[in-house]
Length: 419
Image (cartoon, rainbow, N blue to C red; front, side, top):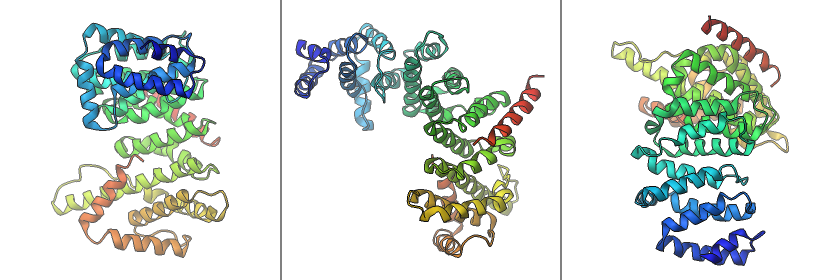
């Protein structure tokens, strides 16, 4: 044990020392897990140790708390809950301190917080965690590193837990995320962590999204993030728009008219492949969603009842503008640095537009029509197959000119809801 702790405090430890320490760790974890965890977290929470030491101490702890295998993960959670409450409290205090000291990414401290949270929150334990994470974001003294690791922890928690178990914390979680995403946040790493956390939280904030004022703030920070000069943030923000369209189609009409069309078309035209890909996939989601709604409406009509949901026909409204842009995207595929994934995404989007709108502009190249026709014949032989195809696409969780649209919508909405 002394060997392990001494190794982690070396500057930096060499590989042989680390390998020897990891062997001891494995055995120590089996024989005396509580003491082992306390001592390792004590190392990882000490800002006087090297970052190599903090990482080396943090990773084995994370691996003792969580696993990608659901059955093993469940066993680890039960093992954690069997540890004495006072010992667990000491460990949790250390792990929260570690959020301020670790600079490696992805943060093992954030993953440890999430690992413990996933074991305890479903058992109505650690109720102070979410308020503490929000406090980290609101404290003016919090460093950018603290904010980033805090948001990473929130993102992991949202990703790994059943959304139903987090609904009671939705307001607090959303507060922390919005603080990290707002335009005034100067650090793009913080903004990225917040944007990723929002992506993982969208499924359990339905109550927030159904409220005009709260939906406005969510959409405002997401739309603003699509204009961030950091490509990572732009891509993550566009991924949020895709998921929002998939989950909350019925709430986005105002934003589609005022911002989303301009934002996504601007993205499709981008020379950055990752950005263009997200813009294209957004419209594939729209088309697939509306194809599903059309099938649903047809079934409702046959049964003599109104459809459950309204189809806003966004695809039909924009097809004459969107098809030439997607066609131009296909024409870029001969360029040396062009991403073939973007080309494939453009073809799929054109195919879905064709299915949504029955036909598309004759300006679309013949090879694209042929591809779409072949795909359509293959996947729409029966009504049921079409429904399945649309449903699958819908639920896959998959610049300067736009500022005016965002600003205009912001002004209009603020005037409407604060009078």
